[in-house]
Image (cartoon, rainbow, N blue to C red; front, side, top):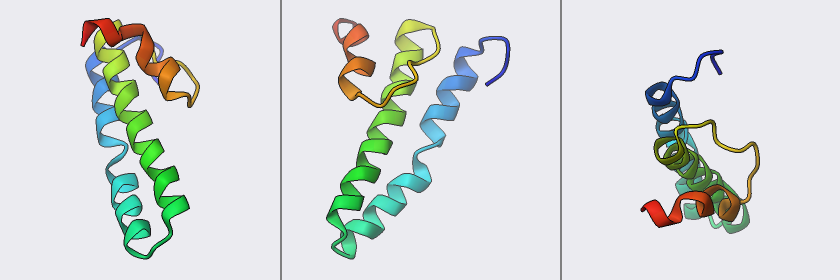
Amino acid sequence: MPDQFNKNLLIEYWINSPEKDFKTMNDLFNTKNNHWALFMGHLVIEKLAKALYVKQMADYPPLLHDLRRILVPHCRAI
């Protein structure tokens, strides 16, 4: 990530990043690889949650994978 905080660039990154993961999730689901499809679905949600975090908090998202900890700080703002 760049040294200087760029809110719009970060939001764009976190929104565009899961596109390939979403396709992979659907492909895995269609071939009955449900455990891996669920894993990829979690990644898609995590990346979109991080975009929302950046938008609401105007800060870098936390470096973790726990959806509750990513989403809870700004749930009241939604």
